[in-house]
Amino acid sequence: MRKERILIIDDDPDIRDVLDLSLSEYYTVSAASNGKEGLEMVKTKNPELIITDYNMPVMNGLEFCRQLRRDILLRHLPVIMLTGKSETKDMVTGIESGADDYLVKPFEPETLLARIRMILKRTTRSLDANPLTHLPGNSSIMEEFQSYIDADKPFAVGYADLDKFKVYNDKYGFEHGDEIIRALARILIDATQLSCGDDAFVGHIGGDDFVFICADDKADTISQNVIDAFDKLSPSFYDEVDRAAGFIMGLDRQGNPIKAALVSVSIGIVSNVNQKITHVAQIGELGADLKKFAKSVGRSNFQRDQRKK
Image 1 (tube, rainbow, N blue to C red):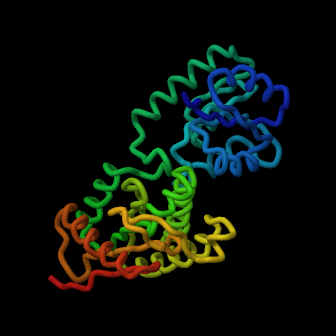
Image 2 (image 1 turned 30 degrees about the horizontal axis):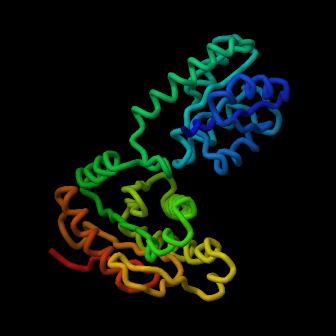
């Protein structure tokens, strides 16, 4: 059975050792010595929960929490904050910065373990997110669609997924395939935030299917930036021989042998500028048609719905 992953962030090596000793029987534990190092490790270790000290050099626990909550891919992660201070104002500040729970040092290991179990159970139940990317899942996507429809302002929905992905998974395995999916998630987040700041939404439908929602006049730029970034990164997912060849051999879904080019990304853009969109199912139907057309091109591209109704 896979152990859930916990990241410890504390500048005191003795505290890190005590926590590791207390937790490693039940969880996979990694450790950082300050908040800045912790932010980097969050992206590589993919923890399910973080335990951070309050006072640390370079970046303290409060600033770590604030920066974590600004990142849409990481903001869901539960954080327990530890401190040697017991003043109420410090507890309030910690909670307001984004911590989910608070423990004052010294504490009993059994107390910490009980808090961890409670928070992980609560997070699992309440989080509507894809377990691989932690992006909002289908319920949140539908709610976001409806909110844009209700606002009655110009908007666009981009449906993105990967091409030649099955052949890649067949040869390199699902773990490597998951790396590509996570990479596309990060690229989508970066592209939408670059164009829109926080005024955009990215969701993960499942598998290699994603959506983003934004102002209509930003959709083309976001799509092109996603394509450029992904095509630049795509060769790095292959070994040297396949990268040099520019393709791999495999089987299509009917079992026929094919020569598949490197994985690319296709995006179909649905907009309410040229047509009235009144319900969420309409967005899905149009998006499926556009994405199918985009995938037929055979390389990374985006296609916008030009029909007027």
